[in-house]
Length: 306
Image (cartoon, rainbow, N blue to C red; front, side, top):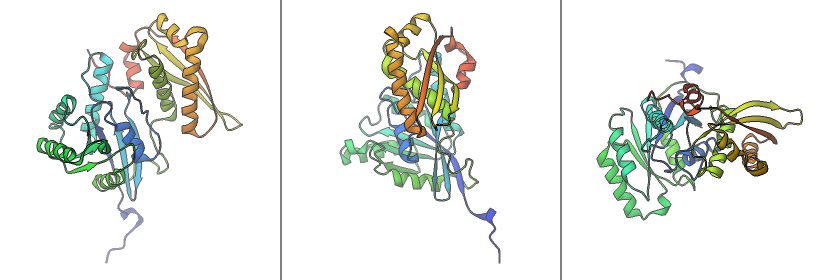
């Protein structure tokens, strides 16, 4: 008779890549699965640059979610880096969740993704999101059409926004990840360092406020993070732009724009850390940061050679 030791307790752990077109709801799904806001949800497309992971513990399983940038037609070097990162996330993961928007169906972007996924050897799960907005007959036809294109292990119909169907998906992912020890402490909801997450929040607020005048020409770094005796946090961040004219846009007349950006970012960071936050923003010009490999590494992206 074999005696079970503590080492024999069967835990499972694995990486799950979420692949889908922009605005299909990947970030919302990560938040719904984890049960806490760990990545930036934006109404604008292409705002998730880095591979920010959410970590879910379900029973004896740990699921590490790789939230990839939305797949879109790349035009600039930064766009190419984001798309290439998304695909490397799919190839490196233990299994792939393919998200389709129930309303959009298999549109041009989804078609491109399904074609490319043929080269990814890992098991694939189809997740049709926003099902509350579409008639049941249309959903079944979409599920049949997608499964005719690729061999999906399972298909789930969910609404990431309302949480409908998310529990079933979470349980299925917990069973599908391979046996193995947990990679992260159980209380660690996201391995994105909080400083990086705070920088992403500020960058997203800049994008929301200035996306017409300043499309993607800025990056944010958290310089200092100081826990104070009164249980508040003092954060200093630098916003880098490429030209002096852009610096003036970020500052705004009499500093009004940066003040508004800072207030929005401070509120959201405080909500996530659960502490009062004092946020200080500085704007500096850094020529050609869009062509600097070091900046890409900081954002968790591969630097495209051309």
